[in-house]
Image (cartoon, rainbow, N blue to C red; front, side):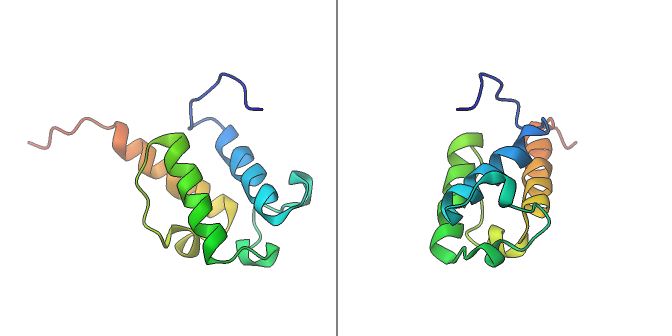
Length: 95
């Protein structure tokens, strides 16, 4: 479904998250508001953990199990994940 582009810092991360939330909420992606709380779509802790697993699998990150509650909208979650990716890509020389 997704093209061969895999750079997660492209605007596509928010779109991909919207598709995943739509999948779990059994709705069309166009029905998902990126600024709405994920719980407003009926996503419970099981779906939140599944979404975290999807992100980990796609991007190779390790997320806290509470990340979807700490960043409860697609916009907030995408910004957090992008920040983690940026940090992970920085050189580790600290001195």
